[in-house]
Length: 439
Ligand code: UGA
Image 1 (cartoon, helix red, strand yellow):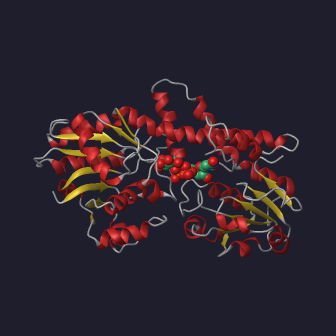
Image 2: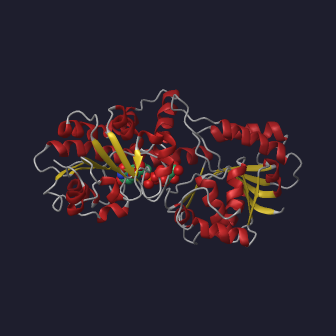
Image 3: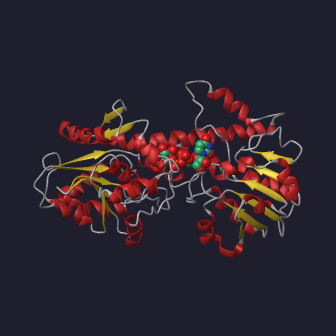
């Protein structure tokens, strides 16, 4: 076999894993149907913005540890095939398996004539039961038998965008859904070359592994919506401050400090999609999912507090100058999929406000959507200059260095809505300062 491992689908998960595996000395083949993307990768230019990824990519290409192909049939040259294609949302919230289905069929055809036993690893996020159907498809189109000719393993991914390289190399845990001891051995032999010795590997069934991924993301999303709900209460009580609640309850080890930041809500390509998919899946099973429905409802309405505040302070927004700091769905990425900034900008544009935005790296992505209906700044100070209200939408580090005097000096009216609690309420108390969860 020419390659140790192949990745089918070079998105966030596929590409990050591919370069990290290559960095650990694994011979990797990356397959993607997007020729433009492949050309970029070949030139050691990552199509995604991630810390350290270009360096690792350059190294991998130079050392010949990462080869690239547009042809799915080339996966037949690898011992282990990772499926890392996207599973987007359908209109009803369920996951769309078209890429998984197509890739499974193509892989099956590609492996028809392989003699050795090989492994397929499902890394894409799929609802429980999907892997069983993938196995059937693989058997049907390859004429081979699962557990006799090939194995299928479920290995969900937990990396966070913006920290993809580090999370890929040093995850908290590895989850492996397996059906046989033989598959366990094969995957363990690969993973021991990549991860630290004492990393917890949780072996479970494929269906449990599928559900673990959804439970993980849905619980984190629930923590966020819960805190946004507490923030709404804190805003209505004397001297209420959700930050103080967070710090106190976060000290309880059973709760932990992480993912308790109230804000304008969660975005990105994972939480909204995965929570919706679990809700839809529960419906199919006739299980009430009010708990997750509420998580989504809180999230969908959380950004409205900004508009309510604007209405209260400025009245009609027609012709009013509003500046927005931060566009990506979170810091350290240029990803704007399901970003809260988009919802806010749309509402402001509908109300005919004059909107100026700035993000350290996501301006161009937003320009692709809003074009000339808003304007774009190349730094935070020029963005807030002359504006009547500044809204902090993403908590980029560089915004934290803005001082009250900057707003006073540059803005027409120093009204600030801090949607991510980046400023100290004490320091900003002399300004018209409103923040999520602050009474
Ligand atoms: C999320 C999970 O954290 C990863 O473990 C998982 O692998 C990934 O989805 C996935 O399924 O692929 P990601 O979407 O990259 O990762 O981003 P997060 O850092 O989890 O943030 C998601 C959203 O929640 C962001 O909009 C962020 O601003 C928001 N958030 C996060 C809060 O509002 N409050 C918090 O305390 C934390």
